[in-house]
Image 1 (cartoon, helix red, strand yellow):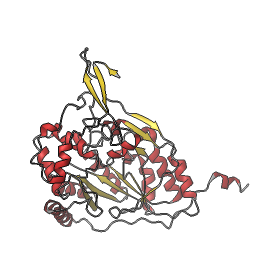
Image 2 (tube, helix red, strand yellow; image 1 turned 30 degrees about the horizontal axis):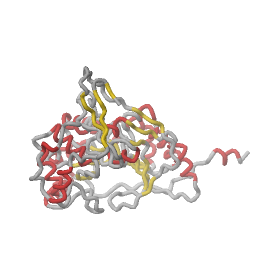
Image 3 (tube, one colour; image 1 turned 60 degrees about the vertical axis):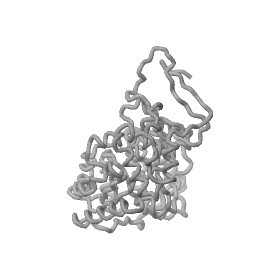
Image 4 (cartoon, rainbow, N blue to C red; image 1 turned 120 degrees about the vertical axis):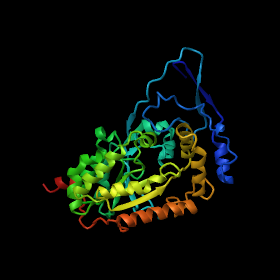
Length: 396
């Protein structure tokens, strides 16, 4: 395959550009890694990835071949910026179950696969490999919209065996990412929850949630909804690099104020905390959110599962070359010498002295400001099974 001025070269062997990072992660510190090994050869040109988070489009872990673009010697023209492509997806089930002790819910809904926000730290990136796509730029540009979500949800809630519990929306990809403006799938789901009096917890970093105040306000009065908004930094320049298409930090804080004034319970998520990058802002973020009326808060330490390790390291070398070694070394210090530890009870906060310090800083700041340690519980006793059209017709 050829592009303008480029030759797409395909090889059978799957090289691990960051193999030395992984081996060192198993051994311990990063002292023996030469960051020259973090090859910039496959970095996507800046013009092409403008407004995106990842800097490469490496193949996923299930692929047998790698693809690498090479200059073929012909006249080179700068490729246009990557466009967002949305593929409609018909799903047969929508509500997913989990038994993780690390989260406060056992069921969730994600209206979209992939996320246009492009957050480089997103732990959901590796899930795109199941689609045969890259967890890198593909995750941000090749999206899937579950267009049948509302109909499937109504069918699942209609089952007489169904027992309501709070359903979390946006635990994997953001339900209010930019394509929601046109797709309106999250809106359709909320309309069903509002009609059936079903409790829902929403996680987002988008001010687009304010569009649905007409639904969220009445639901909050019944104790049926709560919202968690993620703020990773107050530095607009850092936010632009880390999460290029998410709402700015100021817009998120303003959304918090508007939601709380409307009587909707809002909590703050400082997630993720990235050692030596945004950890110095913990107290400032908590202070700003408290001023907006927020009284609940939590945090998550940076998680780097599977392909995300390579993607994040590449991003660091591109944007913060002087800090890359230090950041990854601190990440290892909270993961038992590895770049990631998925052990339940450890994966959200990490372990070791640095993780302990972050946790104590967070607790002290919360206590000083007046945050509550309790969490809002939603009602389940108001739930009513949706009435199917066939049941309505049977009455006549």
